[in-house]
Image (cartoon, rainbow, N blue to C red; front, top):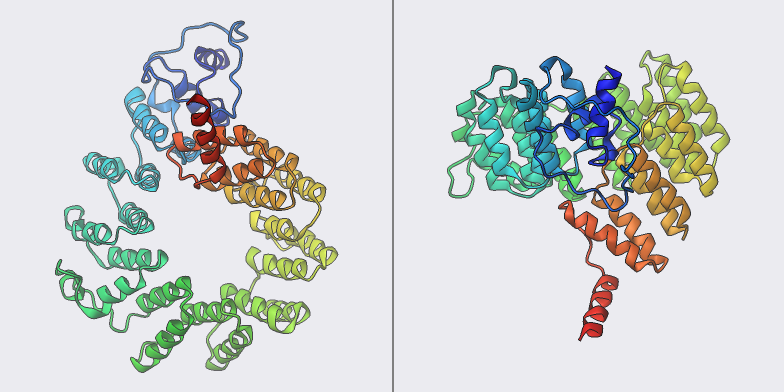
Length: 480
């Protein structure tokens, strides 16, 4: 088996070295002779190895694989590696199916739809949905269209999202769950006015869509009201949040634990944490049993308004009342301590997490990264995090590169970029822009331009930069 794998690796070793972590699939895919002959472009930031002296057995790579060679979880993981390169993701998706007769699951379909939607490739996404609905293992489900709603609305294609809901009869999915998913997606991407029109105004433009057409009664549906309240929260229209909260009372909509949790969060984020504390007391008075989410918001509010020591007291009270803290609870305490410069106590809570059965996660480390002020300390903690098995997210890399960039340090930025490549993550537009910003800050225009071109070649959005325009104008003047 090992010789077979290494021979596949040798067959075309340089095609996409950034994805070796999922070795079986990457090796099968990238080095198969049945794959499309044109290899993907190798990013300029990844060196091309010298293949003049092969160091692997030269057995011929197999021309076909058995479907047992592929597992759904590994296919998903590999697609995740291609999340910022839709062409490669789609090519891999098709290749796995045609190469071995592998049957894609609905979960895999949903992931590729998500990747395609991210790059506005909606026609291809619909073609895949039509293709997959004929196969019992990959029938589109509520999640498929929830993903599609979110991708349309993240691109602010409101009409297309609503039209998609109108097509769901064809899939036997035009029901209250899909309607809730549509409203949730509208609110998630700040199209709350349209969500209100669909729910309460009984019309939608000239399309005839509305509550009468959809046939769902949402007049006193607490879940729908909570979604819209959260939508106004996302838009940070604080006055509208207050009006909508009062309107729920006027219409007799029953407020539940989630309603209060959302509104407490609204009060915290709008700079009125003392009002969130008042809501917490109101909930207790009404006999509403608080869960960890509500306690976490109340702890945060108390920490901001009355100090971290008061927040810790509520944390202890939470435990006494039988509500088990979760990782978010402890992260909240750590963040409050870090914000107050009490790093030693924050580290004690950090050590307590494992004993409480709450393993530190990436957010735990983010609390420290945001507050620490020495590059060496941050990089050491970053290494410790990786050694502990906590995998950085893309926003982790972006946050660190931006932070080092603000301080004017180039070397730590390049170290973080290198670690990101070693982690087999494909950079997104925020990562590229963070790197390019610091390169330009240091006057490395040519190097920055290479990354800018690499970014554009992947279909990612680059920021307009005067430095590149000046550079181009100078070249044209010189040629003239």
